Length: 184
Image (cartoon, rainbow, N blue to C red):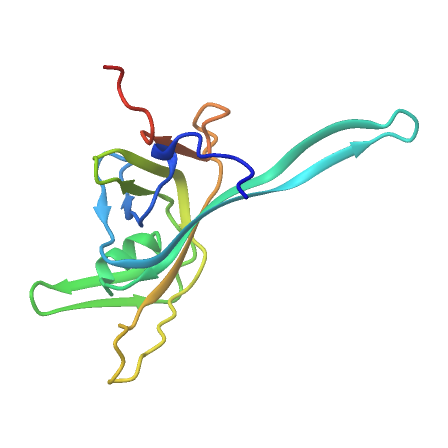
């Protein structure tokens, strides 16, 4: 027996998304290509302040973060270098090879990331995180030669509040066109 009914079937979303990054505050975006397991997570620490004699004084949050994680199927060292925010040395011999060298650099330059899901009708559902750094080093689980799955690199990108933006819009934006059909 159903306990409710679908309120707006156009708000139900199926499918993955395109994960992109920007090193120039969202002016241009670079597509990370084929991926699996893209996940967005928002978290915080809850704050409760109680008095000794008058009950709860305050309820709120602190340490609000947003994360995007997933598995890169395309091992593109130039893109991996950009995601890692300058802690590597990257060189390329165009059409021949790429080299990523790491160790000794400790300061990351934040980037922006977004994941966009587009429906068959062209409607978008998009999450943009404004100030992101990588929080996981390189890990590659090499698959057997006979395997059908490729070698992949799991990535974890963590966004913190960008205090140069207005309060209420410092961490991320979730944008949806799903179920918002124009009036006819």
